[in-house]
Image 1 (cartoon, rainbow, N blue to C red):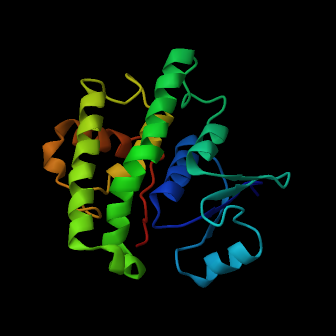
Image 2 (cartoon, rainbow, N blue to C red):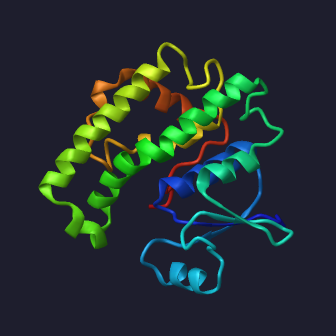
Length: 206
């Protein structure tokens, strides 16, 4: 039995990042689903199982609890090929991971959430959704240009930046309503990530 217990939201890209990396690493873990607005997430918060009040939260065998999706990725990937050894390559990878949380997630993920979660519908005003659409297309264009001719954001092989960016980008069209036809490089990159050995879908049962 694994000593890793992951509390994660099945529909959330931030939670999905961790599940995806665990699958790609071939790591065993126990998954505790805590979907938004559910009794399960309320109970987990009440019991202190989500220290910052949100998922994902990775419980380690020694009692430590890690929060924040990209920090969890960094911890899990230590000693693997998902973190480049070269300091400059690491810095570039971290730059994309900071970009994902500071610029990408607050726009691309937020627009998808406003479209998909009924309890947020009141926030999805026409003006706000239009603003997020324009901002999201600009963010996706930065990614398209940043990818350039390379197969992955780290160059010849994928690293944690790809995992972080993939989570909300691969559903940006379907869930966020963004026009992904504008970004052929991103579409090809999405296909490459989905073809990696061990890959799992966001919500394979739903």
